Image (cartoon, rainbow, N blue to C red; front, top):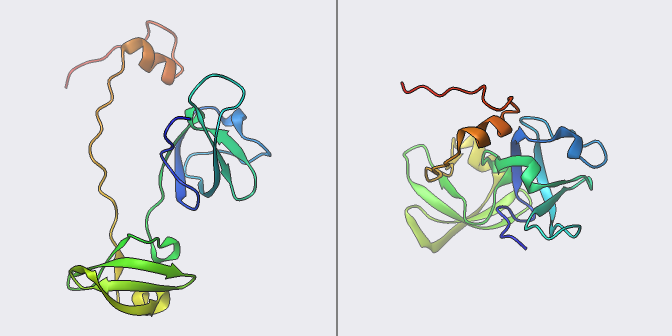
Length: 162
């Protein structure tokens, strides 16, 4: 099976529904849809390396039909390893999550266990969850590939340099 980009329990957002008819059970894989991944499996119907994702309602879709990205990190979807930032810019690492309670490291010392807090305490203190800064990924496409992705008639796309 191809390496899955996401794992069970992660919240993801659909940014490009490549084939809206691909949804199972009427999930409506529309732009902006946020869902939690409940299952990751391989495509058993063909020889491809396609990854198959299911949401918590049992709806499934192949990875090649959607472009998914991690949903914005918040205290409502906190995960172990997330970084929280206080109002002064100091950072602490989330070491454990139990429902609406989490264990954080010391401020600017990720190896030290500091304290258990509730999500509401962190929110009322003005803390935030640091967002991932994805590395810039370069995608090379031929004009024919781009026309196909944009569902344009072959030979109708012209590219100009700014």
